[in-house]
Image (cartoon, rainbow, N blue to C red; front, side, top):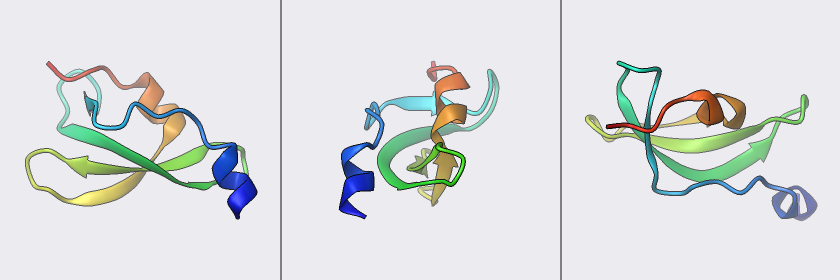
Length: 67
């Protein structure tokens, strides 16, 4: 597992993004694990509720920065 951690993507930890232009805001956390398709799951925290979950890194890249 340690080798997976070494190849984890560079993640903008603490940056606030939103699900699409008008979606809820979330704060980016740390890489959790690599998926079989090569993507990564990243921990995120919902700004309004504090709920924590995991979200695909490729989707984070597509989401806009929150305003």
